[in-house]
Image (cartoon, rainbow, N blue to C red; front, side, top):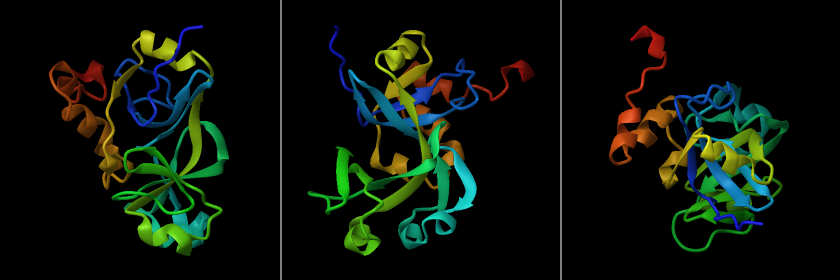
Length: 186
């Protein structure tokens, strides 16, 4: 079996050709990627549901907008917390994924780690791929793989994240940010 190079902590940015409605114009933060498969959350799908409506204790730590995000089509009844912790070691109840980005154990009392969080997003569900499935999608050209930045987790205008992430890339990839939402209107 071929060894899989980990993409954990990187972003998957949907190519304009990706037509699956769950992932059209999606920006996915990969939380785990290895030979067993991949798991990530879609960073740019806010819902109208407020964090206070679901996890009231965590609401005061949620970034703007303080809503639950649809993390992907898998297990929509489960919640994941992703937060940025500036500086060195994270507090108990936070597990580093990449750099300052990590997962929050939502079972931990918020007062134990809330003050250490630079920003927090709550996701309902996640995006998941079985062994080799994501690699197949990458080969098919469904995704661009780019570096994440801590600010991606808490982008205050998530509806612009797809364009913003592409725009900061170099060369031709930056030009994709200008791709029209509906190319048939060109």
